[in-house]
Amino acid sequence: MAIYGIGTDVVQVSRVAAVMERTKGRFAEKVLGPDELRVYHARRARSEVRGLAFLATRFSAKEAFSKAIGLGMRWPMTWRALQTLNEPSGKPVCVASGELAEWLAQRGITSQVTVSDERDYAVSFVIAEVPECAPDRS
Image (cartoon, rainbow, N blue to C red; front, side, top):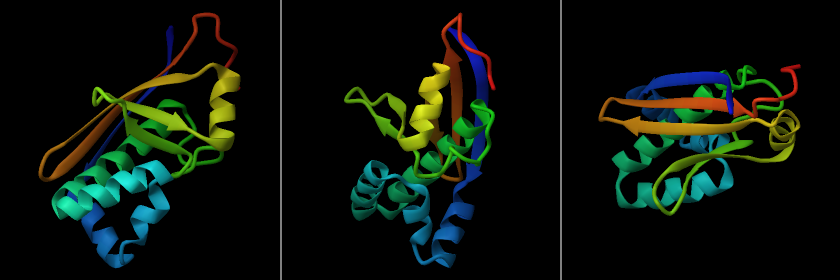
């Protein structure tokens, strides 16, 4: 595999909390995909703090992923087209859907993601990879 791109993002959890308050919770609905949203609601039901941390890490992962693939937040990269889910082992994985999944498949792009959070910050790092004999980046 060869590196296609890398991306990292740090988000201040209090800023995510402020956006959630300002949007009366709609921010989570706008940013999270359906599987992420189910996890978010379950975590938030147990602990408001853990729910907010989950939202912040997933927001951060989407930002880092968009940087790693070189699109930023423009089509086909959308908030809900990429979800960061967890394997049974706990390892986070990026799962794309729709036109983003097609765009990635056409280019042979796969990714590795890591997310972490502390009380005040959430951080994510993504490495986008392609096979050694990958097509060009256009």
